View (cartoon, rainbow, N blue to C red):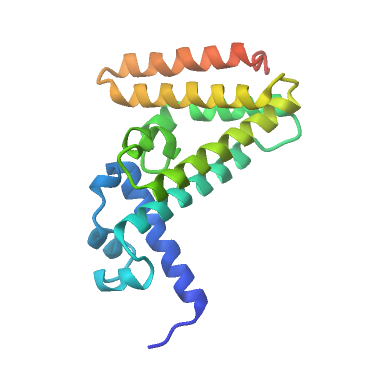
Length: 197
């Protein structure tokens, strides 16, 4: 049976969605092509119609994750008031809900520790994703009146990613919550995002 281009792109999108979920949950090394294809409703044999290798799948899935993270930022931080937009994103990012939704959350805390061992293409896509999220934060911080908004955006992102990563790593729920709470208070104070009532 011959399919049109829309069918092939929709199939690839389904595969990438499943791959992104599995990579976030298990890390790139834990990805099984057969399982991803099965969850996407396809046979393992169809994999090579879409990707040259598992490495190509991982790189494309990383790009997909960052596209999703960018859309999440845009939806969460929507509005004309950059201060309110930044506060909404900080509140989302440093929340227990985001911490606990590893399969759907930001790829930065989920993958940062794994990327140094991956191939250059995956690392390039990851770097592009970091730059994109940093630019979104920098734009909002610049509109909020922050000097050197690019450096500030990178610093804000690094602190938030670090907090989520640490909060996921510790076993004690109270300690995990405290990590998020302290980071949230620090970011809100440092970037003048308080008193939003």
